[in-house]
Image 1: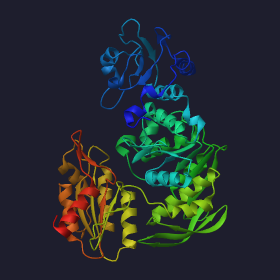
Image 2: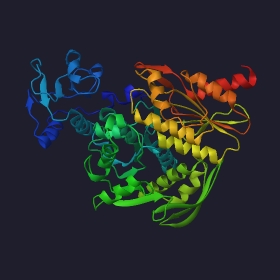
Image 3: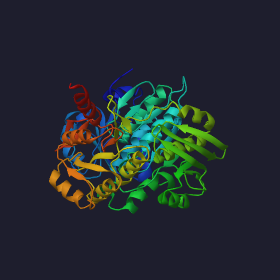
Image 4: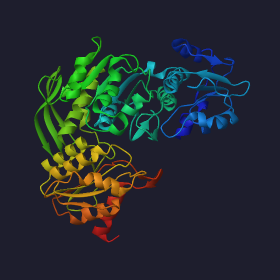
Length: 512
């Protein structure tokens, strides 16, 4: 079995060779797509990256924010592309190369990819999870609850891709369709009959999941994020809603929705009548509800109210928002016809998610936690939760990404000032933006009386926070979680908060 990602999605994993007559014709007939040239070519691969073209490929020239696939046509043709799918009807192509003109190259790529890889989504129970916060925890937990000996479950998400018989590092929360469908097919080959995937708003808007068949669609929440891309919360919501109302693909059989979230309640009202609904949350009226919560540094305990009656739940996940995540997973399990009472027992053995409230412990007398919290709501949830279970002070290191939603920077700083005792603002993937410009926006959110320091170097900021911590305190290093790099000027520079914090702690404690 092949082991690296490029091999996983290689055309060699597709045993049958197909012609455009069987697949492109179907897509073309649906959309009345014009074509110039022969449709008799045997398609050996489909590519949207000219560097991955092999002889006999169909090359999809995708327009993007930084470049356009049409600018790389020469390389694709030199490498042997025989079919070019683009949004331009008048491409100057050599004799023997077929030009297919489409209105939306991304959507056509998704439909063609699905057909090319024999529609693996139709042969498994696929759960899609969308929302601003909680996707990774819920998807990973749901996989844990579903898996049994001899019954592997696939996972596609922010941290990694689990293909049933092997794990592959994730390079994107929701992959392009050209990568997604061969991964689903690999899961089927490994014996997976179900899979869980995170679905980002970018993935929906860019048609990466257009036409995908979801048995269950899950809505976690909607808070401020990605407004540099979507423009407004309303547009952000509309993208998420496409998973549930048929605008992205087939209607899900069941929608699992956060009934505590205002956008979730709105979504319930706007669903087509044939979509069945299960809601979860802490408020009354939800199908899966938690009450009588006990929260501490070891996890949580609560009474689960559900269609199955009342049950006592003991969770190793700390924090009120993780109670909501657990409820979401239980609701998904119920929607899939699984035994929720068995899931309650399996929950006790869940070890959490990489980079989500992950402890860094070198024997120091205070807690150090690394978390992916990179939105105002996620940072607020993390800090409030840590305040509830910390005897001493809660100190935080956080930053705001460059080339992204500038309005979020002020809000995150306000959250940090309101919920933390001491703050170090620093870099977090500055990309191409000057750190002083980012700091300028963040400083607009500084509250009077807050103890906040602006430190450009993230390692130095972490060091200062650790140096300030006393016994019984907690240091939260927020924003990057599982990420092992910093994005600076289109370059990924190695940087892992967990490793950095561990090294600094070891040096302080043992002089190493």
